[in-house]
Image (cartoon, rainbow, N blue to C red):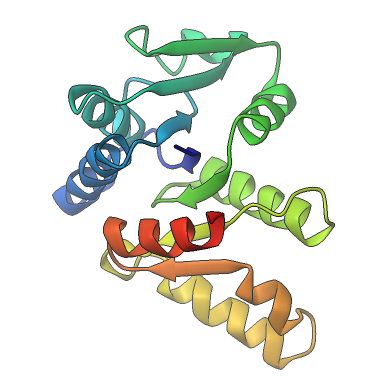
Length: 181
């Protein structure tokens, strides 16, 4: 019964596959007994993920800064919505409430959250599993770039290995669950 933090877009993207995968992950988290921790929005992939987890009987914790409650249209049907004063508190609260991290497709906010939590792991501030859900090859260019960063000597292979990836929600959950045991 782990708490899995998911970083993902507040937009749906331009392929229905992104919404389908977010819903599949939400339902799988609930079915496997995990609590979802996420950014607290009811729109975009964020809303799809949360709604699927709730519909499957799962627990969902959303974390949203006060100034974004109106802007991002907070989801008020969650198990718990934690309101915080700013983005720094949001990320810290999400991290403190999670046992593992997953990034789905998203934009600049998703990237920033992913890289910050990975940096925190690298610095020894946590030892929680982290993974990318590479839906439709969304993260393939990033994964190539990261491998290139290793080959050029700017990233250690052990640090690169901290970030696992898989093409499907079930494969990624199995990889992360294996690291949680």
